[in-house]
Image 1 (cartoon, protein in one colour):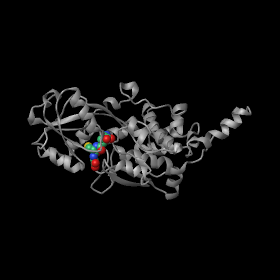
Image 2: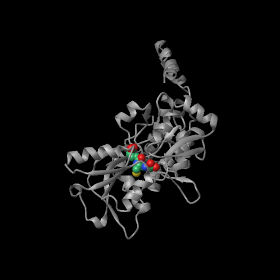
Image 3: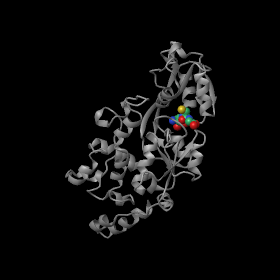
Image 4: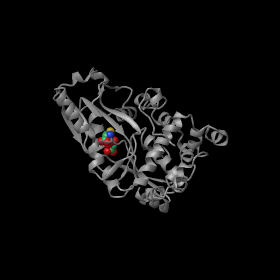
Length: 347
Ligand SMILES: N[C@@H](CCC(=O)N[C@@H](CS)C(=O)NCC(=O)O)C(=O)O
């Protein structure tokens, strides 16, 4: 953010530290925030149909974990979570959509890897969901470990991290897996549920989602315990807009920090009215004006929390034990509860 840093740097040289801090912000909005504001709408790329992450409900309203991240960003930057246009994107379409400027934000079960960040003109923001790649098999197959997959056929979708991870896993474990890869998601699902493959490989959350949506009571499916690869999922943005990258990143960290400090959708207004705790005041928008540093309103994070609740509330609403997916928090617990979510501090 050269334009943001420039002014304080010059002033620091003149020794006017306090003045510099007072003047630090609002920064230049950055092209994406400017475009989103001018349009009055955030254009968010999501999955076409992945129950729990992004799927239209009976009324045609998009619902899910990835959708709530779009809503939280829209609430933080526009003050209105309804001002989102959703663009359903398949695995092969997603990066082109972001590179071409067709979407402002890609919030779509996308794994962050070095190659993806360094070679595609894109940036990761933050890990929103710690996933792992695994296998699903029909319960009747009696396969309960990847050791029993030798020479078996595995269904996967092309243009995903899944394909290469699977090849490496097969080689490392001498499994001689045969891969049946399809470009189209529906084709993979149809092939697997019609019994054309012995196993389905993908991110564990996706396998749980597919099982919840497509398996029948008479045809049960189990997830094998072994882990094929780490799959850290998170929103991506275009390169070259540091302000926008920072906004999306800090909305995610803010939602995680809100959980850590006990700020929920239900107690937000009460904490805004009465909390004297500086960390809580920063989150609910009554303390230091951190929104200004991001080019946003003082209550940017409160607007997001009012809309979606904190990170834990989003997780439980769409993916948790009381949902069709029934996922445990596991790796997605907070750092002080045995998990990996350690938000950089909102201060
Ligand atoms: N996290 C992996 C996999 C993401 C992915 O696209 N998974 C597929 C298979 S479950 C999917 O969601 N497909 C939906 C579609 O293409 O419409 C990645 O980033 O490559």
